[in-house]
Amino acid sequence: MSAGAIVRSMVDSVGFSDLPVAGLRVQLGGLGLVLLPQHAVWDAAARTVMVSDLHLGKEATFRAMAIPVPDQTARTLELLTDLLTVTGAARLIILGDLLHARRGRCEQMIQQVTKWRQRHAGVRVELVRGNHDRASGDPPDDWQMTCFSEPFSHAGVQLCHDPKQCRGPGLAGHLHPVVRLRGPGRDSLRLPCFLLRGDVLVLPAFSRFVDGRVLQVGAADQIFAVSEQTVVSMS
Image (cartoon, rainbow, N blue to C red; front, side, top):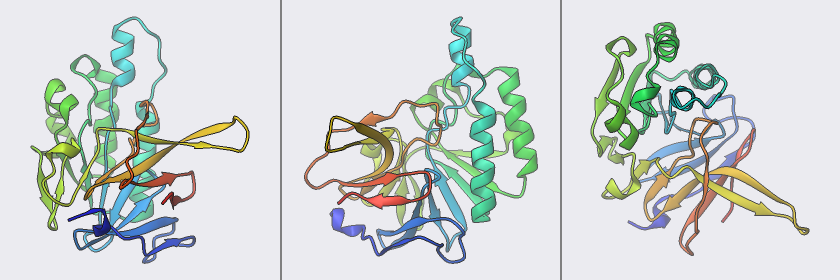
């Protein structure tokens, strides 16, 4: 299946199926999805929202190396809460790199996530392990998250962390894709983006404390740039 498997049907400026946010409707492997400006993918039929690359504890990892970095976990959890609230999701799937590193598993971060998880106990949370998760270990039991190795199937679409692990239509993370927009002068703007490469859709990093990568875009690639309010096709 080629990149033509994902088709932009319209950009919603008001909402999608009673979803009060702007989003871009797409189809992947026959599955109807919405790309959200919250760096997430929404499957309305399954009441499932998917994100990737939270990298919780990254700031604690820096602190362990005597590099002072302010707390980032609270902001990431706040963004997750907003996402769950606006979608009304019953299920959250994290496409890898929930945790940043083993040395970042500090007590403060663990307690922050534990309390967040208690507030959203009614939401089913699943993690497709990424390379950072394999190094840092599975989340604490109190987080009530079910972990899977990649690829993990959802409605006929493969869910992975590394795009290279998808065999057929899939969703993945890992690359932290960013697109650079250039103006008529020498000004430029970097925006996170969704990247469709072949029949695999790569999500932008959910954490705002993660460096994005401006990737070399192939002729067949499709880019969907993310602003604060909407997602726009660059094709």
